[in-house]
Length: 67
Image 1 (cartoon, one colour):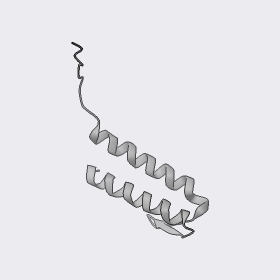
Image 2 (cartoon, rainbow, N blue to C red):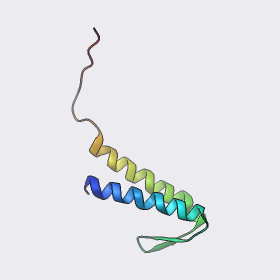
Image 3 (tube, rainbow, N blue to C red):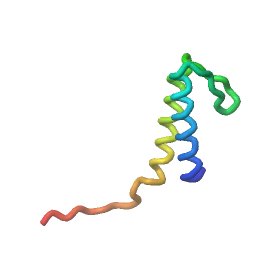
Image 4 (cartoon, rainbow, N blue to C red):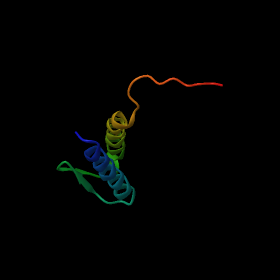
């Protein structure tokens, strides 16, 4: 999974949230979702945001200097 793929999936889930909140049904990975599935859509978005954070999280240890 690349950083761009994670970003694209987050955008897909955000669009799905908007559509469901507007009363529309959406399809994610072949599954039709509606208002009843809003919590599942949000969980999916949060999971992708966690995946993306792995790419943006600093690696290694950094030290702060206080003068």
